[in-house]
Figure 1: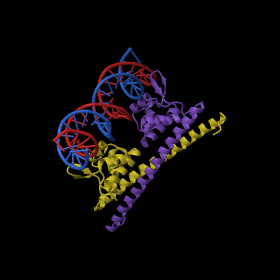
Figure 2: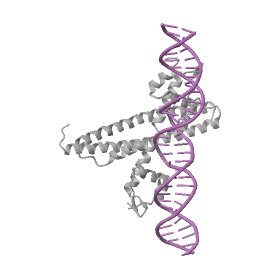
Figure 3: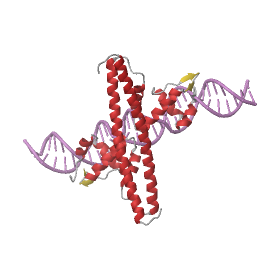
Length: 128
Length: 128
DNA sequence: CACGGCGTTTACGTAAAAGTCAATTCAGGC
DNA sequence: GCCTGAATTGACTTTTACGTAAACGCCGTG
């Protein structure tokens, strides 16, 4: 496990711009340490970037991603807050399950569309 | 099966604004018929709205949703176009499978986060 | 016939998520 | 000590997906 990654290393690995990484820092999603003015990204930052991009692919906004990331942190010590957090986590989980249903439905319809195409090819006597 | 739906009926059913429905029409995603200047939405339009919102929940842009919707239409008659369409469909399917992996990973991490919270509650001696 | 409610068009506004550009700064190599 | 390449900051711009406001048409009701 490397200790630090440069900003350009991460832009290449994840195919994002430096602007994007700085934007995520401005948004408080990552907090790379500094040597002078230069950002040094630790493995934990790298992992956060991974999670951020995963969230983006799922259509979550930056704010939603921020919320999700906070859920991964150390659980709070106070009972009320713990219970609240559990509630929030379950809301997100329900959100994701809805997305999963949407996803499966869309996949099924695409499967059907593909099959129509294949049938049509067969009708046209195409020997793949 | 109703023949027509008014714009406000659909706004209420799907909890979206009239502006949104008109926007989708401007974008060519739906084509309600007209009686005078008034839009009449058919069941097929309603179904399209359903698909559009599903796409949105999955994080697809309007352009991507347009592409997906076009895939559901009657397959073209020309062999080259058919093969191209099949390729495009498979790209979207791969896209969705990636989203599914992202989704499952996120769900797993949320499960873990929840479990940490529950453990913490037990430590604090909370009875459910 | 005045009204309230629904619907329409046109036009401008806006928030989110970066992209782009300019001006600087800094660290390392020769 | 200077140069080059990488990095930084800050400001402005862009795109997407609508929101919002103005101004008006149509129609059924009291």
